Length: 463
Image 1 (spheres, helix red, strand yellow):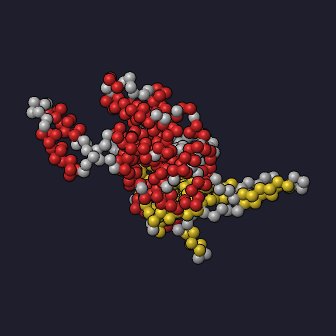
Image 2 (cartoon, rainbow, N blue to C red):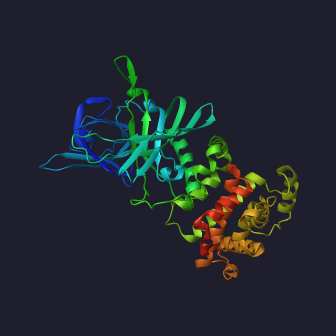
Image 3 (cartoon, one colour):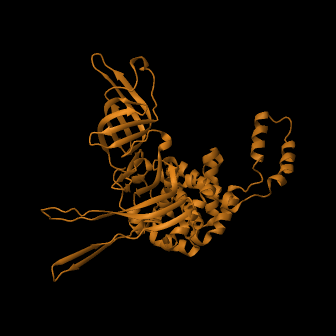
């Protein structure tokens, strides 16, 4: 999916297969797919109408069946003299299959090759021996066994391996074998592609936490009943390639090594099943925290202030969801709330009275300062070396959050800015990562070891 392509072919709407139009489909990962037609799916009297076909079907000049899903017309022109042209933006491209209806877009399983997955897994089927005296090199390759995680009765996730090559030639001057690591997602019954995308997103987040760099799907292959073929009484399911826009995917990804990562497959190989199951079981509970944390990683152009506020909010939310944090229950607080509201003088303006009521609604919950103290106390064994003076750190976080939220000039001098804000934000990131690693299943000693060996957390900018 990281590579661009172009298909020339003929295209039509599923309910009008006889009206076929020539055109070109172009795809670039960072921009998505665009179909340019020499003609139009609409009549001249409907030229002002914008088409949004759910499905467009096509056959490429090299014989590939193609389904374009969720399309909308971006341009339609007619020239005199000349001819009609039109173009469509396409959300998802399925190469190798024709889906007549959106309800048919279901898959038995999906295989995904993610950016940096090969390095994270670091599993090789190669055995290379150099015999210098015999002037011989022996290269053996054996496909590694897959690693399986049973999330529940409805979902199975595997680390799988796909070999390619070597090619044989009359003139043989080289032999190449390439191994690609993939994540394979299997379900007992075919599921809609939109359901698989949710699963893919959670796997992507899991890998991103370990790798601590944005992870993107580079290649996606699916198996569907719509592609079922029977040849000589044997059933085959030719894989379907899937493409969609990945706006921020790097054109030249950096090279990563295990010491650059927070944790690798090697750290959890014996517990892969339980770790991944744990991740999925806590999605509903921790998804708001995931979104805030991963949002800071996937948005490199995010302002420092936004990144800081996102991480503060994530830590607040984590504490509330995992450790609670209420002075009293809703039922216990109601008479207190009513008494406080009734104590507001009648002469107070309606706008101020409304603001006070909204503020008092949350009076039963811990403040940010209280939550920060609690969370630092709980995880202090792993964060002491990063945080330094705990009280000073907490006050700096609270003052900076309050200033960034309310822009109170009295707090401006006490709030962090510039490089100090960057260091404060990095410390918050480490604190949140410690929280997430704990929930994932790592022990305190293991977490200490993960940070100690990682070169990224030795930079002076943290301190």
